[in-house]
Length: 112
Image (cartoon, rainbow, N blue to C red; front, top):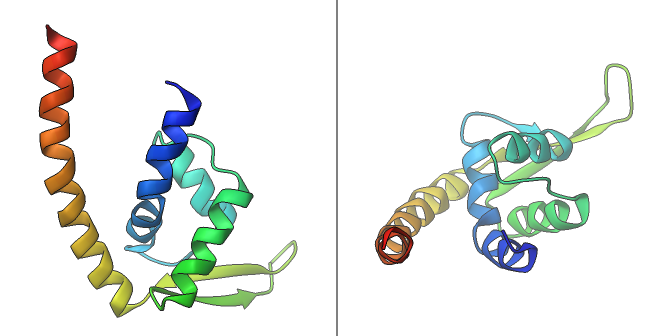
């Protein structure tokens, strides 16, 4: 896939992906990046992920708390707020409403 196109798509959905990963519990930046990569989104650099986390924190969709690491440096853990859960529900529904027709259009061109 063209990396420029992938980057454009990712910018449009990374906030939603991060909110979804935090749905089941708190996490820290590096762990979120690993989860995104494992899910097939691809490697996400800190320079991409941390501004998203900061924006989500500033808008009240996540909270953050520093904790001392057991065997390393302190980590900043992020947790979904009630507003974040609402944004995830709304954004998830909006994404599904958007992706379904796009998939229909694109797959028609791919199949024939």
